[in-house]
Amino acid sequence: MASDYVVSPPLAETSKAVPFWGVQRPWLNLYGIRIRPVAPFGSTSSKPFNDPAPIHRSLPDELLFEIFSRMSPYTLGRAMCVCRKWRYTLRNPILWRAACLKTWQVSGEIENRRLQFMYDGSWRKMWLLRPRLRTDGIYVSRNTYIRAGVAEWKVKNPVHLVCYYRYIRFYPSGKFLYKNSSQKVKEVAKRMNLRASEADLIFRGNCVLENNQVEAALLYPGLRPTLLRIRLRLRGTTVGANNRLDPLSFITTGVNDAEAHHSNDIMLGGVMEGWQDNETHNPDVPAISHNRGLAPFVFVPFEEVETSVLNLSVENMDYFVAG
Image: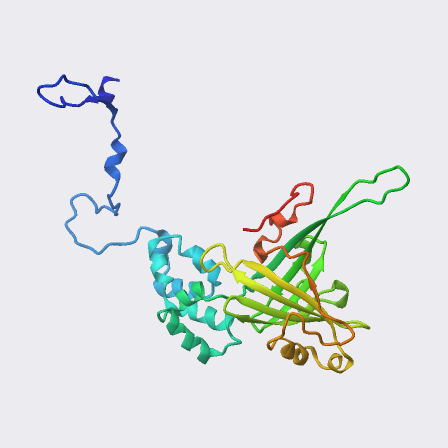
């Protein structure tokens, strides 16, 4: 044990020597040292540095780049954390150009190229900083309210905590799907597609994204058609996440007979052109603004719908706060 301690020299010649005890830490000498493969003993050849990773020795750079070009943007982000070589390879603008043009295909290729110069000409920086609606999952809003039990004579029934969800799935073409249900995320995500039947009660609508504000509208069919207009604010918990939607307004109004005969695309396209909060499309049915059930939407990717915390019951998750 005596070899594990060292004694410092005296602080001053005139003062009394004060010993300082410390433990040696040999691993501190390893900091700042780059570990590289060592040539065989006695070898005098000056060969270039070879990457020790087996995947880099067996796959050429052209084939590795072809694999990266088939990945989704969020898979590319995870791959950048593997090693330094992958990080530099994945900064190639070709890998991010296709993702940007597909995400903002409504704007057109010419408009997207013009906006690219606002982000220093980098497609990757444009993907991270430009607001966009994610299409690789669904946005979920969990809402709860308390419903009092019915009182019968002198018997007091318990109070019930009711939980329901709002689901929104966006498409790059400007379409979106909307569903209001008490079913969990893993049950609804299987049917949130354009081939859903009328029994699933999944409604289609049009949406427009301006900066970070989303304006959407959809039509509830039936004997008395109802128009739902939604205004949302898009944000992200981290840079490029775009995983939160804050509801600003939910407005329902009636539709007159003349507009009900038009197709949804024609009618909804005219609705979203500068509509006001108190604007109605049927004089007999005024516009109603809904102030309840405005919890923020949380984005859930398709690969996480089975394990999402939103699948928990009310007993296991009595509250949920979206960051």
